[in-house]
Amino acid sequence: MNATMIDEKELTALDRCDVCGAQAYVRATMEHGELLFCGHHAAQHIDKLREVAVSIQDQRDRIS
Image 1: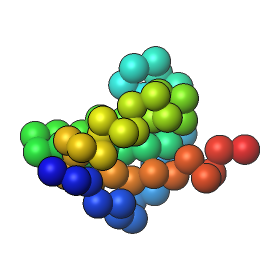
Image 2: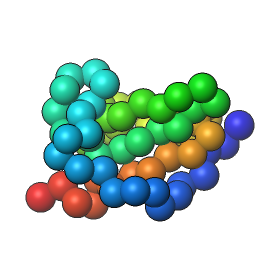
Image 3: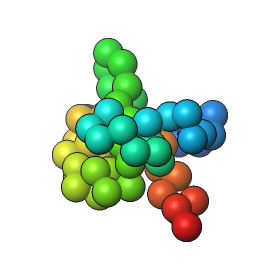
């Protein structure tokens, strides 16, 4: 399965990384739920996420 890049509801400061709790900039929607990642953890896992996610919302361009 190859994930599609989509535009969904914008992630906000209230959305937190499931790994470390930092602000999330990437939402990976899986077949049964979703995972949120900060920029650092998204970069670490993006290749695998592209293989298994249904869709990926990537807003890392908003990181200042």
